[in-house]
Every structure is written in structure tokens, then in C-alpha cells.
Image (cartoon, rainbow, N blue to C red):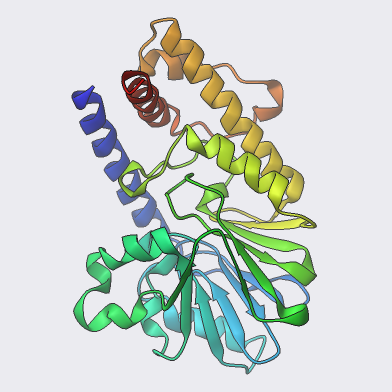
Amino acid sequence: MKRSLVLGSIVFAGLILALFVNAQQAPLGTIQKVADNLYMIPGGGGNTAVYVAANGVVLVDTKLANNGQGILDQVKSVTPKPITHIINTHTHGDHNGSNEFFPANVEIVAHENTAASMARMPAFQDAKKFALPDRSFNDKLTLLTGRDAIDLYYFGRAHTNGDAFVVFRALRAMHSGDAFAQKGTPLLDANNGGSGVAIVDTMAKAAAGIKDVDTVIPGHSTLMKWSDFVEFGEFNRAFLDAARAAQRAGRTPEQAAAELKLPEKFKDYGLARAGANMTAIFAELSRAELSR
């Protein structure tokens, strides 16, 4: 089992490196209107949401490092208002890498587990500590008031142990971060508490607990519908069920990935991480069995 865990960590490190390299190669796209006063900037890392509130602009995620000026230029193309808040959906550098570009009076908000993980990142040490979250939350936090209100939710481990769902209440829209990055096998960062087992309950709780959302800004894809978000949760449940069945049948993670058969409605889902996720889930299931 120790060998499986080491291999899983190596595989994850490779996936993270590939993700960052690909993101660095993708330039910032043109800002896109999502709804009244809500925009999305793709490219250069994770999708950035731009929310124009009454007294300023709230950003959700700041992409990889050195994208701050590009983000600001895009924001200025739709509003002269200043940046007042940044929300980081989780700890990865392709979502918080340009925090440091923005002045220290911009309030940075994240889940408490994300805040703790970011504090350990080399990118936020010493003189750059000002780019760490100023405010954190546990289960739920509401920023701003009235029609500007933004609800932040946490439902448990998924991509990491600190994934925040950011809901723009009046606009019936949500930024899901990398808890729902795209239609396909999720990246599971076990080093930061991610879980291929817990993600199933987390997504189910999110689908049940978040109300009145029509449009979803995913972490790394085009705009999605709420039904896509719900379906992604069902995909993870089907994947976990397949992993459990394969392990009980004595299959290896590699065999389980090669033999994977999912319902037809998931035929367009990318399975590039199927092998890595099977390895991670097998290890989680084995640890759970040993702890009984």
C-alpha cells in the first residue's frame, strides 16, 4: 500500500506540472459576459470571474503568476471601478498565482483549509504574505449585501480539502472552481486533502444545498448549466462505484481503468485521469478497510 501511495503522489505531481505548463501556454482570452455585471476571463490558468458590485469589483481566482495586469486590463474594459475583493476557490497556483499583483487593501477570502494550505506555499512567504487570505470561513459566508450578495459554500473534500463554491445570488450563477473544472475525471490533489471517495458526497451535498443557480463558471472549461454540475456529481458516483466493484473483484487500478464502462450519458466525458484516479481511490478504499 505504501508503494501505491508513493506512485499516486508521483502521478499527481506530474499531472499538476502538466496542468500548469498547459495553462502557462494558454494566453488570457477575451472577457466574456455571463450575466448582468458578471463576466468570465478564460486562459492563463483557471477561469476568473469578474463581478461588478455597487462599490467595486470582486474577482474569483487570479490565475497563474504574472497575469495580474492582464486581468486588470480586461476588468477596465467593462468598468472603471476598483478591485475590492478576491475570492480564491482553492489553493492551487493557477487560481491564486496573481494575488500578489493587487494592492494589500484588496480583501482576499478563502475557505479556512485553503488559507492554511496557501500559507505553506513557497509563493506566499515573507514579503508576499500580504497576498494570503485576510478572511476565511468554515461552512458558509456571505460577502456584500442586498442584490450584491455573494454566498460562499463549503461541503467537504473534493479536488482539495478547501474547495469553495461561489454563488452570485441575484444572478443565479456560480463559480465552482476545480471541484467542477470540466466534464471529465477530476484532478484529485491528495496532498491537499482531495478525495475521489469524498467528492461523491461533497457534490451531492452541493447539488442539494445550493439553490436557484442556472449558470456555472467551471474551473477550466466553457460556461455550463446547473444540470451539467449535477450530472458531474453523478459521473463521480458512477466512477467510484466502478472502482469499488473492480477492487472487490480483485482487479488492479490499471485493469479497472482499462475495463471502465460507464453509463452512456457520460460518453463525452474525458477519462485522461482514469488510471491516476483509480489508483488514488483504491488506496483510499484500502485505508478505510484497514481502519475498521
